[in-house]
Image (tube, rainbow, N blue to C red; front, side, top):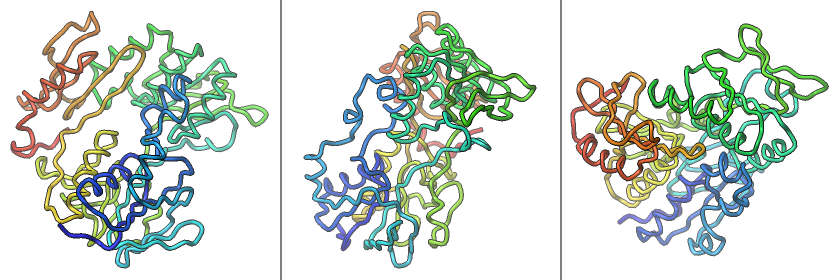
Length: 397
C-alpha cells in the first residue's frame, strides 16, 4: 500500500466525504484535508427535494455524519471556502480567499451546478434547488404561496412537484418532454408517472418549451410557454438539469469536456482523481466514456478512487442505478432504461401499482425497473444484468 504525503479533497458532499472515509478504512493515516464552498456540515442531497422541502425533516437530519463521526476521521475540514483554481502539476488548490492548499494527491469532487433560464436572475420568487439553503428558501416561499410552476420534467422537477402538491399548493409541471422522466425511463413509465401526477392534481403542461418568465413589481408572476400560454405562479422552480461544476478548473492542466475526463481508474492526471457527478470516466465494460449523476455512484466510485490512490489498480465498472420517490411511488432503475428500448412486464401488475419491467435493446436486457417492487428489481438486476459488465461492449442509444 502506498502512503501519499497528504491528500486534498475538493468537495465535502457525498462523493468527497465517502472518499475520505474509504481512505481511512483502507488504513491511510496521513494528512487528510477536505475543502468545501458550503459552510454547513456535509449533508445528503436526495432528501432536499422531499423530506426537507416538505418540512418532515429538520435540516440537521439530512447530515451525512454527526460531528463526532467527522471528528473521528482525523481530517481537517475547510468549510465556506470555494476552490477557484487548481494547478494539477503542482497539485495546489487556490481558494476564493487566496489560501493555497496542497496535497501529494488531489481529489476533485465539486459536483454540479444548476442550469438556468435566460432572465431567471431578475424577478424575485424564481428558485433552483441544488443545496440545503436553496431547499430552505424555497420551503419558506411555498409556505406563504398558493401557486407553483415547476419548469423541468426530470427527476428533480417531478419530485419537487410531488412534494409541493403534498403541501397543498396548486402545482403546474412544465417541460419539453412528453411525460415526466420520459428521457430517463421512456414512454411507458413516463406516461404512468404522468397519470400519477395528474391524479394527485398536478397540472401538466408538457411537450412545449418555456419562452420567458413574466413578472410585475420585481416579482415573478408566471411562466410564458411558446405559443403564448401563461402559467400563473407565486413561485417558479427551474429544474432543467445541471452541468458539471468545472469552471474553476479552466487552465488547470486537466482535460475538461462533459466533466473532468478520467481514465478507467478515475485518474485525471498524475496524482489527481475525480469522483462523483463531475467525473467522466472510461467504463471498460461498456467501451465508452460515462458520467453518472446519482447518489449511489458518488459512494461507489469513492471506494474505487480511494483504493487506487493507495496503490490498487482497479477499474470502475458500475451498473448504473438511481431511485426516485414521488407520492407513494418508489421507483428503482438499474442499468440503461433507455427510451429507445422495448419494455416488457416481468413481475407484478401495473394496475395494482406494484410491478417490475425489463428494458431490451437488440435482443439484450439493458435495464430493470421496479415500481414499488425494490426487492424484485434487485433480484432481476442480479439475474439479467449480472454478466452485463463482462459482456461485449454496449453503446446505449
